[in-house]
Image 1 (cartoon, each protein chain N blue to C red):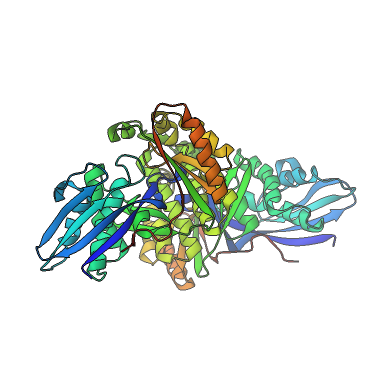
Image 2 (image 1 turned 90 degrees about the vertical axis):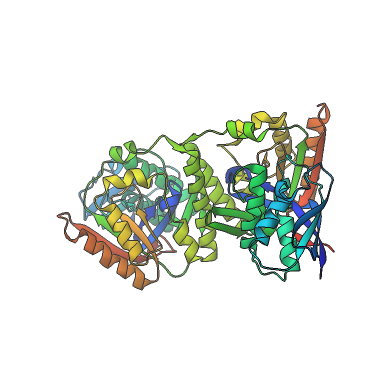
Length: 307
Length: 307
């Protein structure tokens, strides 16, 4: 096998109470990439379609993670990468993570899988760092492992695979505004009240338990963020209205996807997820900003071969 | 049945990363209580042995929780309570919780179990509040439910039963010094660094996952407290030495039990728990303070009838 086509999924990081550690994987949104073994040594990005991203290997997230992996192997051949992006950079659903994951996953497959998923995450972290200026894995882990993941620590990297209840669907709306990374970082508090921190870890512990036991009521009562959302939600127009509309539609919870501006909602069953979509659309109908909207079952497989 | 004898167990609250929410139940340390149906209406405490605690119903933790429950039923008889305390008040292993739980559990049994465990916890909270001046359930929940519990919230009360890995043993040392509740509260920070809070909830989420999957290595790496222990450990002589000695003996983790002064350690297997005991004894051998030391399997049943 000298060439492979893969689907590298979008992901939702943070998941309300799980700021900086939790994430889950989407099924219906993602990039496609072709990875090809070629005679010439090194990594070359031959095509980027969909969005205007650099072809220079060292300036492209997929290229940087590919180089990190390539430097860890000894081969007398190289790789070409074609990128067909569907996930808009800066949307808050793991666009850079999908790129970073896709290249190393594809190369690993062509090499006969010398690396495990944790090792692939380590390589992908290098690519992700190019986009986000820091090493984190809360989008990479769900893209590679699928389902819900908890990144216990980045150094050393420790990714936990949390079970995914069967009937869980996400609705994601991406209001197409730009939030600068610097701005979304600047609003984060350096210190938080101990009482809020306790509430947050009670909720995260409960969410992990709820995912293990498929307890949808508990998922609903655990999906709260008393630390970050009060600050970051101010950067997203109509966030509170969107959240209320999701809950009104019967959603289990609703929060900021990554650092925004996308908003995620989780529902039990496709019907509720569709109702959330309709309510989201109503909320944003009168606004002069465009939006994308997606519904997806939780993707328990992660990045995969499609050709 | 007009009279029963019960065993009301000691418990460990907080459990390192689970400050204010997690707890687990012990098997080999606990109070015994006799609860008796009598013709005269009301609650009377007829005997307290072991430690010098008030016989007046309204001043005794077991009495106050019993009254809370008695006020919720309509009967033409009353209850007598005898208390044989083995858990020293102020030791940090749930002495007041054992009293508060024992009376309502025993009464509920004699009444034919009209209340479930969550309702019993609600009554017991009233007794616990007499001792600790605030309503909390992190010792009550494991005493009533057994095993590991996570108190998601007190109001409304929501107790989660987290699975207990088969081979888990606790070693507890109680250095017999007095830490005033006011002092152990005063050292708590009002605000904490966001980065520390994130580390703490990553660890708590991991601990819950580890208990679900019986992953002892993960239990070991999750049992850390970066928020409370650095402050409260200063109040406990030789805490750091004791903790190091437990880890040296192969323990999975070691931390402050409740608000101290007891120190708990968790181990995989009885042999390691015994080695921890020996190391604890070495650490405290040269000190002129007395100590009690206990080894216990995790008690997955909680409070129980013994006669």
